[in-house]
Length: 424
Image (cartoon, rainbow, N blue to C red; front, side, top):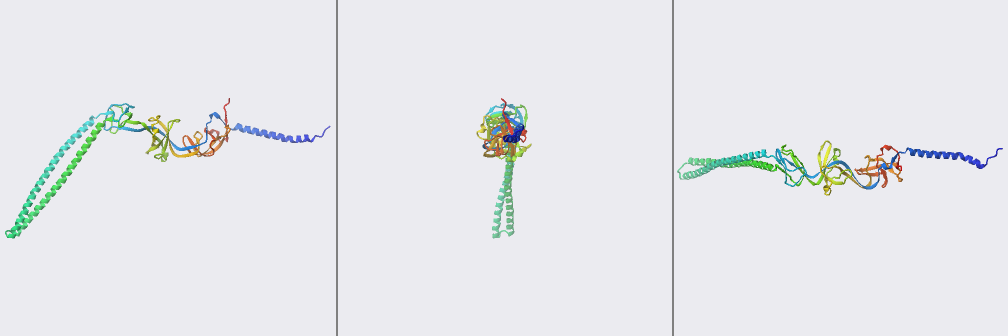
């Protein structure tokens, strides 16, 4: 026969659906978490580069390419149009100031110098003849002047005699007037001769100055050509190393053609080029960082000169290295270097190592490691100034937090990333 169920049994049966429901809900929750974990992207920990946010200085810079050049290099040019007769020193030779490097053929220039000297001699002879002609003309005029002065004196005496006789009644007034007229005419002729002598003096002086100019010009031409002949033996103007020489014997060279270069290799500077779109950002005395290779030392200097001409969209400028860095042992002529022109400096700011993650914007998403270092969370971070090494952080992370430097574009917008350890 049926028995009545106890109250405890009834309560147990009433709680059973709730317990089952709770177990089902818990199972669904665990399954959902496991499913989301299975969908979360992951990266191998050993393939991920990370860096901590730290406090330091950031110098914003513009990247340029550069070439190391000698601190001082002198180009030796042909003083005359000639041909190369002999090369006395090979490239790479250390030379002293005044030491001969190359000889030019001077036969044609010697002939030209001889013609100049002959022309100078003819001009000097013409000058002597001109001086004789001028002196003869002046002597004639002086003789005429002296004769006229004597005539004037005679006419003055005659006038006084006529005037005296007129007082005594021994002559007429007409004779006195005639004597006065004769004296006035003689005075006029004397003044004319004196003016002519002065004019002849000035003309003679002008002619002599003109001849003197011609002789001086010829003397300068002879002196200049003589100097060029002496320079036809191409010599070093400073001690240094012969970095280039035209060694094509018999080659014809025009006046001004470069024949050799002597460089002082004890100091160096940098010739750099950059796109003309950054031309307005360049200023003389701007601080410049010069890096020798990707992992080489970093040298400092300043912009010394900026070429005002733009060639094929490129601006050229020169960097004078600091006194200590210009003697750096690793510097070599024509060595390719990376150049960074500093445009601004942020001191004692949050900074992060530059890497593939940085896209150059003011704000972007990055992945920040959680303290357990097994999960990285996606976070929007604000950036400021940047250079080849560092990026300024203005917000989004704190000092000491660790950021993934690896490029994470393939992760899309995943909020979390799991870092997996290698299997052992």
